[in-house]
Length: 70
Image (tube, rainbow, N blue to C red; front, side, top):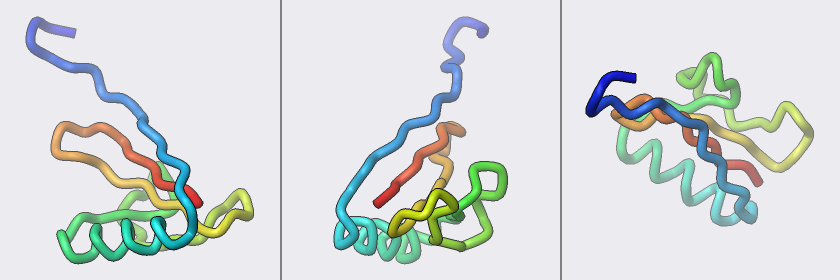
């Protein structure tokens, strides 16, 4: 990377189902696109492809990929 450039990262948080629901509601309120596929973060799906309660990915303004899973 160039001086002053920060490489993007993937950051994941495991939470309980109630916290997951609150986090998704907050993303919706803030107008932040999310989705259950890291390659399609705007699909607005919350189902967990690994069989858990829910999973969402979203990007921050700097391009870091955040994941919330319950």
